View 1: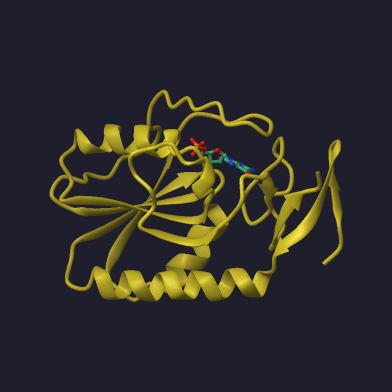
View 2: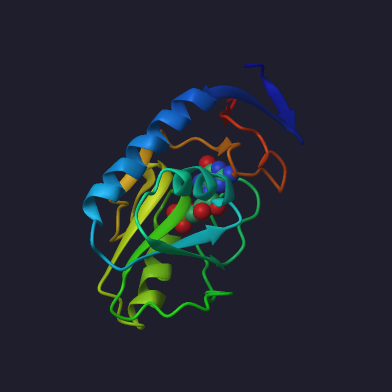
Length: 178
Ligand code: 5GP
């Protein structure tokens, strides 16, 4: 994999397509085991998780519902930490088991707010499944139960993740060159 340039920043290859696919397959298998016989709904947080959601769902063999929602925007390389509302959530989640699909859990502020908003609807359980977890940066109450990779606190793009709306289409994950 080559270095890439997006806007003013250079990114270096970090996780290959093969690395990601292997991790995603393992996550799907774990979920298949853990949620056997349960009423399961996946809530995918757009935009960043579209590619992860697609790959993860191909490995899920359980009957389940998949729904999509949007939360607040994220601009540039620092988290704004703002979540105003959940947009587009039309499925009822009361008394159901929810797995939120996220691209990355960084400070955890976003996911904590999403969970707080969803909890009002009284689901049976809520867990988080993320491609990436920046554990060092995490300040929240809800670390993801399922994640593909723990990564250092450096900005990444690709596999759905953007830098000012570019780079989402990259099939691998790249880290900013410092
Ligand atoms: P948190 O609230 O956990 O700090 O941030 C969550 C959101 O910030 C993620 O869903 C993602 O959109 C964005 N984010 C956090 N870290 C990164 C990163 O390294 N790269 C990109 N592209 N987005 C990030």
